[in-house]
Image (cartoon, rainbow, N blue to C red):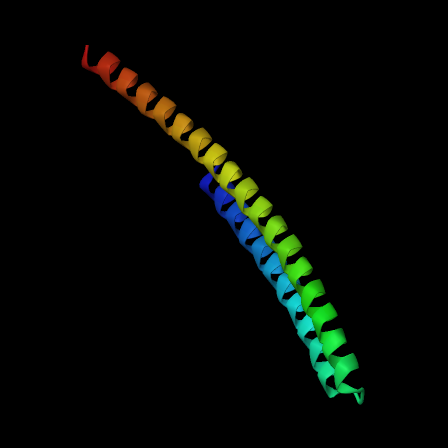
Length: 108
């Protein structure tokens, strides 16, 4: 695996994370828009408060779901990074060992 491959893979991971952040932002934005719509709707105060309480609970539930998914994605990403780092380090160690072996053979 070349450095260019690693750089491209890193770029793809960053782009994926950006798309996920945009999706989270859009979800929060839609929820806030719904709350604003409820606040500006011509309803009685009691109905508006009930709707606000309902929407606040829904928002809380959505945030918990998004938070859980985000945590899972972060853990998966950390695992992939660790695996790739170990693969790279293993390859580097093998190359160093080969170079040392060649140097020792040349010195003899």
